[in-house]
Amino acid sequence: MDKNISKFKKNLTVIILCGGKGQRLKPLTLETPKPLIKIKKKTILEYIINHLLKYKVKNIVIASGYKNQLIKNFILKKYKKKIEVINTGIKTDILHRIRKISNNRSGEFLICYGDTLADININKLIKFYMMNKEKITLSSFELKSSFGILNINKKNNSVRNFAEKPGLDIWFNIGYIMFSQKFIEILDKFKKFENFLTFCSKRNIMRSYKHFGKHVTINTITELENAKSQITKFK
Image (cartoon, rainbow, N blue to C red; front, side, top):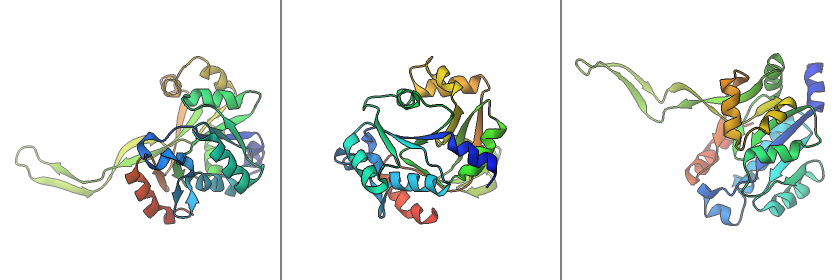
């Protein structure tokens, strides 16, 4: 491993966002917080943490909220005292969760969503970030059509081309957002995290790390069922 990357990880704090109620996954989330819902035999949160640990990322903090104690008990049982859980409230914007955890911490931050699985190569992400260190790095994934797309001639309706479920060259945010301590000061100017990201994009201080591997986000029952069929593709 690159010595610079190894050194970088020592000053990297990973914040996994696990505070929301998971409204769109009801009734499953009435008793269980979304990050603790199981896909096959492991929880969503377990897949995320294990992926980070595989890359020897050690400073991991869980930003909990809804059913905080259940998440805390799970982490303590599964990972002992290696991972910190901080209750950042239930009706709290992502921005405020980050602020609470970033207090008295320096170095770089990596924000992960507690409902998103991606086999991102963390070392490559760090290397990309280090080449754009004055910027915020946001990981993205290409939106793919669920349908076969036709290119139709307007004059006679002849089909020029057919593509089965193609990539649309539209990229969306999948988390794994990396930035330095100086951006914490910028956060204080906003009330919502999405406004902060919009500001960074308009000021040309954001770069996208395009992820071409596996990805699944679990917001609904349908997406959860899809995740069960996709999870075997994750290493």
